[in-house]
Length: 127
Image (cartoon, rainbow, N blue to C red; front, side):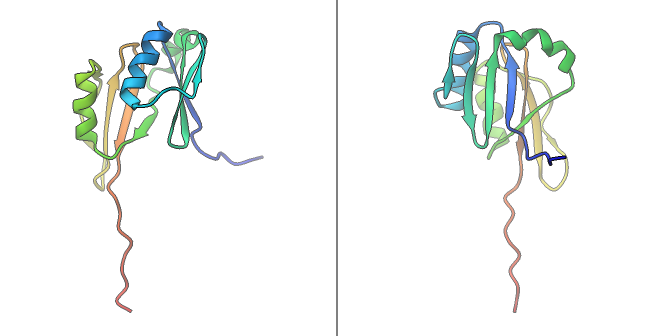
């Protein structure tokens, strides 16, 4: 049996693919790498964010499942998403060791999670 290698793709169900394409293009600051009437995909780091109008009916079965996207500055993203009309779904929470997490509802009802992890500096030896 093979090992799980990591998160590859997150797909959000949307009701209007053109509106969702425009909204996520603005949020991510990039154009999609895959762009059709049935699927729009954005490359975000090592992962793909997919927008799919056919996945909308599956959203109710996925309540409680949140994919968290890494960001450098949660506070800046909270401000940015608020300005874009996203509704905050949870408060910013420090879950320990300075790791901050927050979630939002996009205009299409998907939960978008954000996580900021503090930059760690390698320990310097006195030797």
